[in-house]
Length: 215
Ligand SMILES: Nc1nc2c(ncn2[C@@H]2O[C@H](COP(=O)(O)OP(=O)(O)OP(=O)(O)O)[C@@H](O)[C@H]2O)c(=O)[nH]1
Ligand SMILES: [Mg+2]
Image 1: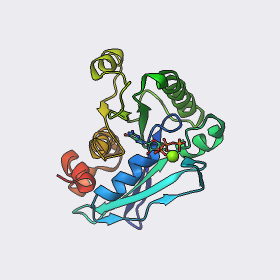
Image 2: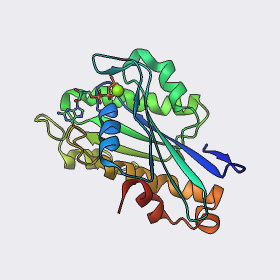
Image 3: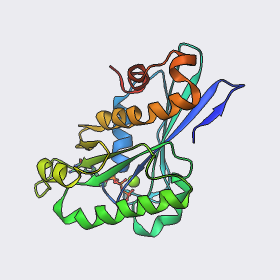
């Protein structure tokens, strides 16, 4: 549910990084802040952390102007993964236009991943979004660690699911831009239908992603 302000010619899009505690959501945003160079990039806001654990959320604002003059703003949020912070996760998720589920690739984290994914599905419903249509991509992070599920295993397990799978080492930045690009490709058709990005604003799917993530 993007926020469109016609008078100000501004479209604000909310994207949420969701997942279990310590899977690397905050690290994704930090690396995006280092690596991306869109027309507009705000400071990353990291609210109230305790030993590296997010207590509320992080926010990275990004944006660009379309050829038509429309200001397209993105607000990238992370949720706190710790089980106790469910109310905050719901608040952050509300009115999201898309989400990245950041899973931890370690075998020891399989159950935490499943529980967090179920929690995402539940909370999407609770905040009035539709899990069947919400633009979503899955990132398997921490590919640098030793005891991880192999790519083949993960692809097989997720084969019947409709969402793109991405593999990342957020610590080094590997795969973080690709993940955001994949999410933007999922979000584009929804926004295009609603706001005529192509027809009214001269913004195709490729240009839309490239305006944030680069060529
Ligand atoms: N080895 C390795 N460590 C990572 C990677 N990504 C993140 N980490 C580390 O994992 C820990 C947790 O990362 P965060 O980004 O804070 O995790 P989070 O998902 O925001 O955690 P919560 O805020 O508690 O939900 C930190 O020590 C990171 O440095 C990665 O790709 N590989
Ligand atoms: Mg965090």
